[in-house]
Image (cartoon, rainbow over all chains, first blue to last red; front, side):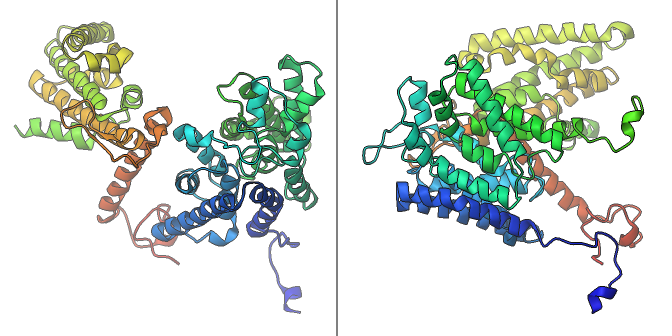
Length: 312
Length: 229
């Protein structure tokens, strides 16, 4: 009864949606990819993921205690950052690499810029780039186990070798822990779409632009096998569904999301075709993250009735 | 004499060109891959700065106001050429490491900045000490940045000097720190640390105009003594 008499300002209809259950949804959606990665690469991969999640949570906790800030451990954002970083590591890197990556992601990229909602780049992606530049040797090593090729499909394609598309789709191939199975990632992405945690604009424009770019500039023409292999290969799928849709570092405006997706597609294409390494999703992502404030400023929606006035 | 010491203190601490004034960022970020390179850059800049301050101060009544900038540049450029030739002749290793950044000392904002802001208005003696202070502040800052970048990014301490030391084998250098992003990271962290120290020191003093009503004070959010309500 008391609630009915409660006088308060709008909004009167409240959603129970909050950071913690959104983050939980993302973590759930990442489970298939995580499970598949662990199944494929063994328990050591699980250790890597646990270390990166653990240190992400620990860094967040220690920093917030130390600076006397509100404890945000329970909102799950550090958990997702740690999980994403773990999934973006090659399966057999030393554990300390996961540790350093997590500490960098949370401490430098997230907390030093003001904590959740303030980071200028996706922490997991920035940390992956940090590790890629710092420990190129470890981060590009994909040892061959049980008949697997020791090069990732993307590198193989770059060298002009044939790749097995079906294996790339199901994930029976080599790569970082979470990126290998397109199927598992799509399942997670679909879950997020259905739960309305993400909308379709960014992933679909990203993947569409990328496919179109490769069609036009890869020099292969209408080679469906090559196009599909490029779409399934590397970090593109996990990047498009999980990293590009990160709330903090993607545009809030509708038009901005199209622009963001298109930019990501073009940049990833450029990196993959002419970059120094075979992959380029991480670099494209953190670069476009930095452009987000500009994109938002250029795509502020006009309020109804403004169209009539010329130049304000 | 006090004035002279004040100039040194001003350049090294109070208006440190790198950490406080944020001048001369280009060499600061580009050449500090090791403590030795940082020190070399700092000292070359200091040599130019001291002499240019002296000359500009001595000529301050002779140089017409309208063409003062070209005149300063001529003086600075001549000095830089001398320093460049000297480094090339006597420390070729440093010459190779610094490369294009030696001639670029000509356009270092610190030198033109001190000429314009100080040397052109003050007597030669003070101007020399101003140059010394600023130069020392710059050298210390660059050596400091270089030291950390080298330590983390290459696992060595003071390489290129007689005191060179390498960290034990098991240390994996985080090579991003000797690359460009590392320069930004180290510079930002040092400045953040110094600012934190400053805030802590200033926090002990009573805030000017504080009447104890934190609820209406615009600065309450950043005030250390703000009462939580």
